[in-house]
Image 1 (cartoon, rainbow over the protein chains, first blue to last red):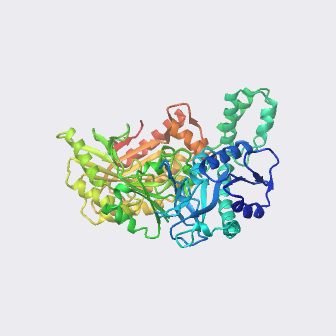
Image 2: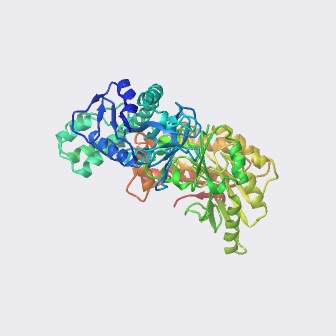
Image 3: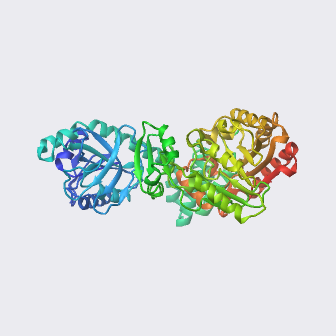
Length: 273
Length: 330
């Protein structure tokens, strides 16, 4: 799943169109759009709004822990050309001076830069940094929802010393984001793939739910059952979890014992030989 | 290919940092106050980061030299370790480093001169006694050497400190710095090996066994003292054949007189590290094996461990005798 957080409707519109998102009918504090894989919220300007919108979207998507979280939007920079796309390799809260370093391991398609989150529009661009108003709030909140490698800020340069904020128009903002939608979608797909690759190892045989439905397992036993099923899948990936012995087990304890016995019959190190 | 280098402000002008940075002309440079701001935060995934780790250049401020863990000794009484680097360029599925750090980025501490001072401090505590210093606890001592220049510095440092014994521990073939100078008799170059099946399955990016043996023989012929590390020993039903073949391969051309020490220990991990690894790699068969997961140090069930250790001890003893054998059990 991908969760987009954007400040303005003008920034969000190209993504809403690209992914054919529909408006969520549930009452929410911030407008939420979605399709099967993608969620988007429009948080308004400022880091407090961004943090609140992340929190709300996290609840809307039912606390999904392995989502990709992206803050996409426009930003100022002293001299980068208008329309340049950058991911943030550091996010500085200009007010508190707290700094985060989003890992860039999966961000191979786009160059990165420093990003400073300010409380009022920055028109002097004092450092070699992008300037926005949401990233600090977004990042600090989204980092609680997923692993840092898939929590990223993608910024498109909208103003610089040559081309000030006074020349920004709503239509111009939409066009800047629209020009980068394809690459943004590709980056997101790669991030999502990375989370899938992690999840593939966690997948458990469907027979597990059958066992859980058939017998009463304590919480500790459920944990034991999960790990035994995982160990079986690791050492004998072709073997289905459910066999005759497990099907005829009469209690949770018998299920666990049968699984342990089955593991004992497998080669210790299946790579050998 | 390292795309991103984080640089602590305090070492940005350090000549060693500059030399390392020269290798990464195209990499993006990110300045930070302390490497821990990048390396230590929670919510990082070691497995994802291992696909493309960044490099951090930092200064080690304290605890530069620490007492070596129990079972690390190879004949000395005073055993210490120091780490010029955190994390390893290789990706071995049995390695405890995966469970030790939150980040897979490589940290290089460029203030080697402070390590020398700390080593002097330890030597001063043990007047008239030798002290061992192990350099491959938190990293491979030599794998990154063409970039870090660690070996050259370490050799100069230890050449001037004859009471200090140094162990380089490596799975690499980066031995140019050693071959470029006469052998030192207070330095041991220790190579780690596992059988071919284990190497193929669990040691990602590690040079092949034959290449490592060739590097080891070059050093032996140049007069360097060689260490052999069969740690971890990995159990399989065919372990006797696999380890028998491995030992034969390793010792066939190696003069026993070059061998300083042979250490061996069964696969084991601290329980917390084991749990972290299972979370990172739930589908890894090694971690799903018959392990005693309730113990503080997770390892093979007793009978398997004893069987494996006894076999290897007997075989290794045939090659080098008992006086050079060191079991590394905690």
